[in-house]
Amino acid sequence: MRRIIIIVGIIITLIGIFWPWLSKIPLGHLPGDIIINRPNARIYIPITTMILLSLLLTLILRIFHK
Image (cartoon, rainbow, N blue to C red; front, side, top):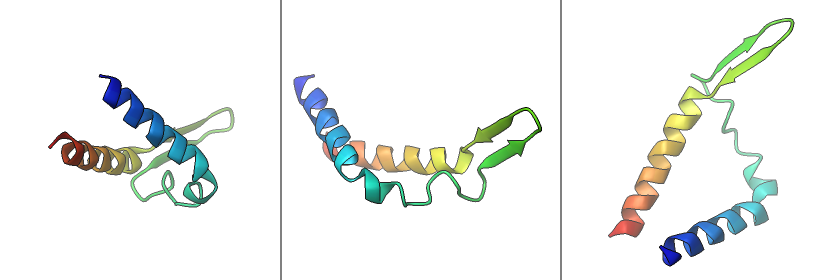
């Protein structure tokens, strides 16, 4: 359990350090993401982005699990 917490902490730290460059990646504005604009509200549903992130995390976790 300690090892997992340390790895998650390192990943969060790396994301924080590289955030200026990571924020330029067009995740969140992919085809398939649903944006509903209304006069009083804006609804954003990132379906494609979540599928890609899920696949990426699954691959990373499978690599580290073995």
